Amino acid sequence: MAAGILPHAPGPASQSSPAVREASFPPDLDKYLTTSVRLTAAQRRALLSGAPVTALLDANTSQEVAVFGAVWVDALPATYVQLLNDIENFERGGGFRVTRRISDPPRLEDFAALELPKDDVEDLKSCRVSACEIKLSQSALDRLRKEIDWSRPTAAADATALARRLALEYVTGYLAGGNDRLAVYRDAGRPTFVADEFKSMVARIPLFVDYLPGLRAYLLQFPNATLSNSSSFLYWQEAQFGLKPTIRINHVVIEDRPGAVAVASKLIYASHYFWTALELRVLVSDPARGRGFWFVDISRSRSDGLTGFVGGIVRRRVENEAQKGLLGLLQNTKRRLE
Image (cartoon, rainbow, N blue to C red; front, side, top):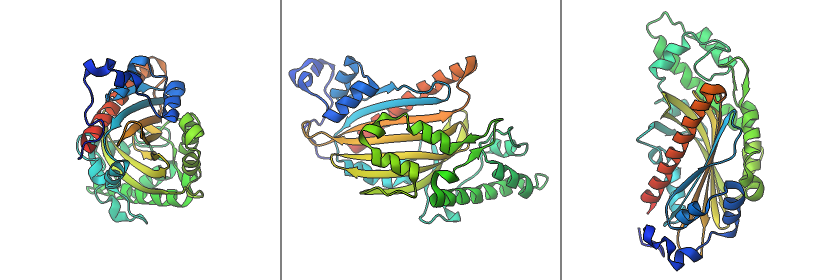
């Protein structure tokens, strides 16, 4: 890729040079970094020098983890969007076991590669409302009990076939009815309404209120809302997260704005760990710096098991893993695009 005005990140010795001292962020980004993220002076200097920076954001400590990350990328935003649209190749390898883009309209064939992990199959045998290792709605649990005969030698294959049908029905329902058709998880004693969790989580993201109100409204009111200069798609994947492989379904929305591109990845289903999650990536142009963009990533996720003594330990581990994962993402994105 052709070199831009700042083709290489300067080393530590150059951080005190006049060029770095006088460098600054675009006004809106600078305001966000100052008032919402509250980066330290050292973090700001590192970011301006070309290094990736991550930080934890304010969050509801009983159920939420929020992480910020950013890095300068010497490439065109359109290049990133092109890679993202090829999601099956963009998210592959490493912790991504399988990634498949879902057709429009969805088809059962879209889920042909979906295989239930062996541990999930074993857990499904004893799943019931309020006691299940997998996040499922009551209707899904009822169908599991009625349609799967665990005494048959084909039980595991039958459970996987049912999981594929349920996934198709779930995304079809979401495309028709939006958040109202998201699951009500009954894996624990108290029902978890995914739509409510998503709505309250989004309300805690100041970037939406101050800069992206149209995208916020679209995510909350889909499919009964329109968003100019945007495109979207759904995809599912099996990813290794924590101790268990997790099947996830995401809705990606790409909005082309003056001076920036906003990408929202909304988690609408996860078989383990998460109630819901939202990853917001904003590609901010900076004409004063030259060709390229600030790659800003804000990720929020909601889950159970973060309270109490053990929950506190789990939370710290999740926060550390989230920051580590985001740092890797920033480094890989910069390397891949440049």
